[in-house]
Image: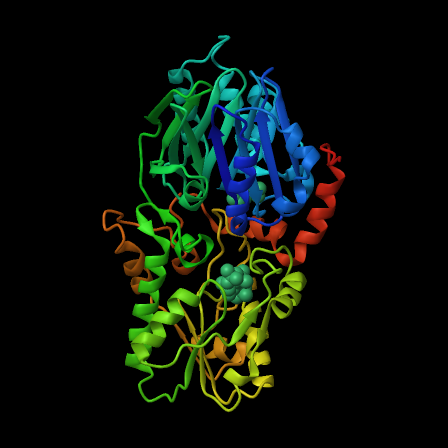
Length: 504
Ligand SMILES: O=P(O)(O)OC[C@H]1O[C@H](OP(=O)(O)OP(=O)(O)O)[C@H](O)[C@@H]1O
Ligand SMILES: NC(=O)CC[C@H](N)C(=O)O
Ligand SMILES: [Mg+2]
């Protein structure tokens, strides 16, 4: 669930893009990149593996000159974690284009073959995003003109939307032209646009989440619509056009459960408000189904579950306590690559405060239980500090299906709820009782913020894939390349393909 940003301004954008990326860091911790266009129409690029604060040192920031730029924080969901797949990507023809992508394509293999055979474009990484950029480039290449009109750009994206399948929110730049942003026809991944006026000039910013606009004093204008493309020229003229015939809005529900920051407004829905409502609905279910349980205290598993847990405590009329201390220097564990680092990080990240657990029946709350890494470690921890009974509530339903749209859950077998009843999951995690939110309640909690949305992308809960192209054999092939047991080998092979070199 990467984070993307793009700014067109009238003064240097390097610091603003850096700041926006730090605000979007929760969407991707593996790699970061910024590319700007300088006054001589050269791209200036810096990308590497690591957090934003580690990737960009003073000398890189000084190199990133220009008033227009895009940035990316990566959480790999295709290919490998190798630095050669860090974004933004670059192609030199036509014009010179760079692109950053959030999401995941589901027909990468076919697209890769098509562009090789039809337009003789070779992509030297396993990244779906680099394939996407090459499709965009080959569509733009069809106009043999020195200067593209907005219509040319929009028809290229119209064609791209017909060819490409999956989830994609993108920002791109074309040398001599400006910044382009577009969102897939299902609007699975988020994208917003904002503006600010400085010295009489209107500057624009597009970003994955509205919180990036807030932080940089851009005024939120609106969400980019599913299938819509936006083109902003160097001198700040904005053009927008719907570029898909068939639009079926279906935003990812997991953004609200876990990925997005609570202070973001996404598709007209406050993420925070949706989490409060998730807590309310789950609290009511617990009150209904567990009325005879003796709960002493409600404790969230920080950090994402805190908003829902507070509401559960209120509904149950029980004290809410911060029973875990979170190490502020350890990032999000779910988006770390590899199971052993995730497991070790849970221990380094969270510690139980004995005073809140000893001799008590505790209701722990998490926003979601995916592989069960967090809950298994946590339950052991709270038992070791003397908790009597341990109950666990998940603000999201059981996750039983892989994700193919930008969340790294490639193999059903890795999911703790796969092929198990709730009692079996409880046993595996080691809790005395376990309860999950019902899917209809989760949908209602999110939908309340914007009742106009009629459908959400819920495939991890119900196995329904909106793009209609996900077959059993697709999922088996995905598992073969990206599952835990195969990814190490795959990563090693990707390293051998490295063309891009990290320098100082
Ligand atoms: O069952 P699992 O596979 O462990 O995945 C689910 C857990 O991972 C996430 O926490 P994370 O530490 O990533 O981030 P947070 O601090 O925002 O809660 C999520 O909030 C759950 O706690
Ligand atoms: N999480 C994402 O949006 C990932 C983008 C892209 N599929 C990659 O792996 O780099
Ligand atoms: Mg968590």
